[in-house]
Image 1 (cartoon, rainbow, N blue to C red):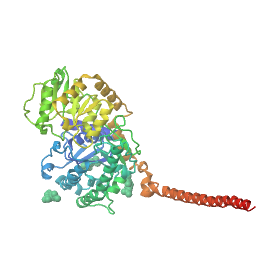
Image 2: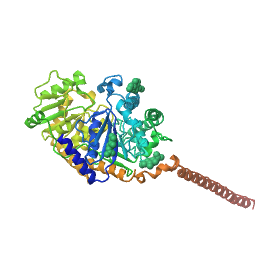
Image 3: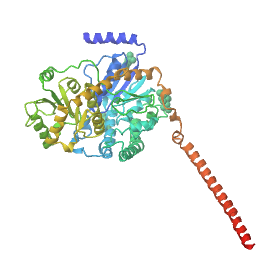
Image 4: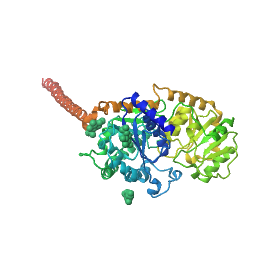
Length: 528
Ligand SMILES: *[C@@H]1O[C@H](CO)[C@@H](O)[C@H](O)[C@H]1NC(C)=O
Ligand SMILES: *[C@@H]1O[C@H](CO)[C@@H](O)[C@H](O)[C@H]1NC(C)=O
Ligand SMILES: *[C@@H]1O[C@H](CO)[C@@H](O)[C@H](O)[C@H]1NC(C)=O
């Protein structure tokens, strides 16, 4: 009770301090837990600063501040989607296109319908509300963006990965396909000719399907489930073109430097804070006492390492058995057959807090962006086994930076694991590089979280800050790409070439006629 009173006082003080407390709607409706880990600090921090925050989510905050209201999707999403969690290890060879065709497009549509049709969300949408801004995660739930139109509020989108090709096209940010790999694509050599061709191919595939098939279905969902929309109802594509602000989970200190419009802001590492992380007592003791070092093994929140094929699991166990270090493994079952004494399993690990411990020497991971950023932040070298999506290219960047080694899934065996672990454990260069990159990742004028909050409040203060949007949005596609001008120049050039050709022809003719004169003269000479 006293905690609530304390919070209320705090809320009031904040209300007075920042006279501009806003009503904020925050949509985190995708089921990815690691995405939620990255996104939730933004909502909580907005509430901490006195804003009235309403969150629609599938995840529940257990002790939220009083001005943080939750609208929860109670339905068991995996049941409702008619299946259990897929094992990601069996789909490791799928191309990005196959992954979209099999899981992402239809999964996104089904999931969004479940969210919009869930009891609390329907009740919420049926009652009256006012919002000054609508913030949404950007990941296969685009129908939710219609709420920006419903509440006539500016739209802010947040990606849990970095740059987004579809949105580069929609907002008319330069594509930069030569240096920026599409977020879902695995490209072995991104800058090679075939790497760039692959990137272009996938970007075209993705854009065409997204815009002309998938988004039209999302449009239908939005109109079907969201009541009282003022007409004319814009399409979801138009809403995304008109987005006020994009917060993207990347940072140039570790990702490729990229040209961005002023309303695209990098907030890579937004869920990481310099405050001392708190570990549960048992883990704290284990980590403190492991003076030979610790290897932390997790394949993230989505991929379950307990689903590893037996031969690969045994390769890990046999390698760990030979080491003197402690191994902390996120293993989702009670029992791990053949577990050596130096391997400690937990169904869930507070990964960021573990990685912050100075005894952790190596992070064995799938290369998911959130975990990779945590390792970067705490300066821990990585051995990465990419499974899908952006993971290979996240790891490739870290390998090129000298703090990671990639181990392909099919190459997991005792020999390779032992070689790699000895390499990374016994060469200081990996750790030194990791520390160096950690330092530059943190070296910013404002923390990532402060940056995110600053720009969200900026958009609220400036009523959508329309002046930050690319003026090119008002031009036709042809004008924006300068095709009319290039076309005109091409025609002028053609005319010039034609004229030059004509003149040369005419001159040749004259020369020929002239050179005929001596012949005549010769003739005359002969005649003479
Ligand atoms: C805060 O938002 C909730 C909606 O979740 C609304 O019912 C409430 O009236 C709002 N409070 C203020 C002070 O605007
Ligand atoms: C929406 O929810 C209702 C129950 O609340 C259910 O009967 C209906 O089948 C759901 N519709 C869809 C398309 O899932
Ligand atoms: C674009 O967004 C602004 C708010 O940022 C809004 O005032 C305007 O009406 C929107 N335009 C369209 C065409 O949706």
